[in-house]
Image (cartoon, rainbow, N blue to C red; front, side, top):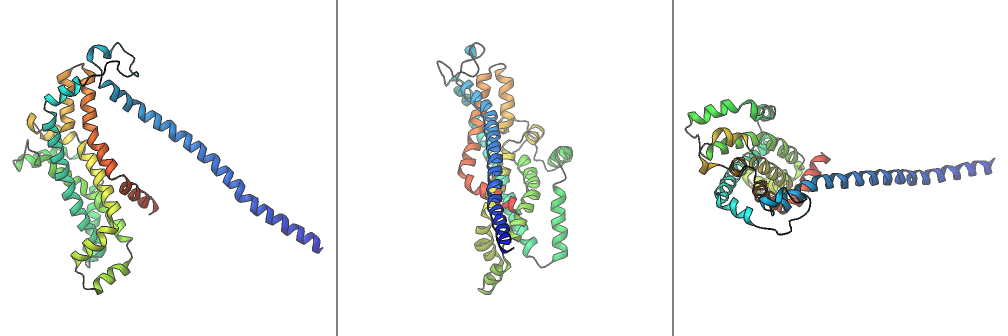
Length: 298
């Protein structure tokens, strides 16, 4: 009887040891499938980018003759010269002014608002304020573009860069407050109490404690809103009339009409427009990934 019991225990122990191995093999199989699908998706994404880059170095005469996926035999920079001579630098600076002028105030206001919502004393008022910010997420820009246009006309800001900056700030704040509130709420209360015991003011706590701990979230919302505002098309289309105040997305539309069927020149303007986005991602890649990973962990 004792021998049978010992044998049963040994068999159970072996099954328990083999179970994780079987689960590990199944997990590795799922990882192989996921990795294969990931590489296929990367290939699908890279093919159009590859086509845009190689086509921008082709001439208009060879564009319809050569294979679209084969690099140009005699690459040329003529398309980039045409784009730069068409006022690309001016449009680029307009986009830079709009993006910085909207993202910096929006992130700063959202950060202070999120800190006040989490650490403020008026709980009822702050809950109502937080609900008001959340309501902003339910209002798309397309639904209020006509009221925004009328307000800009009343403020006598039509056809100015400020006409794009102010609405962009308003539409960037709700999501930023939501993300930053969750990050600040996860900071241990003991850290805030220790800062208060050391004699730190609210501004000191905000800058020396909350800011370093929420830096990944700040970088995440900055890059997200920066890309959104940089690629924005509806607001410039409605609120900008003068060619000198056009940002890059509206200028690309103008290039398409200007060059007609000169697709290499149009794609050269697309490449120049995309370069700042790639630089922004390369600079803040680590903080962006850590912020997104922490957000999924919540």
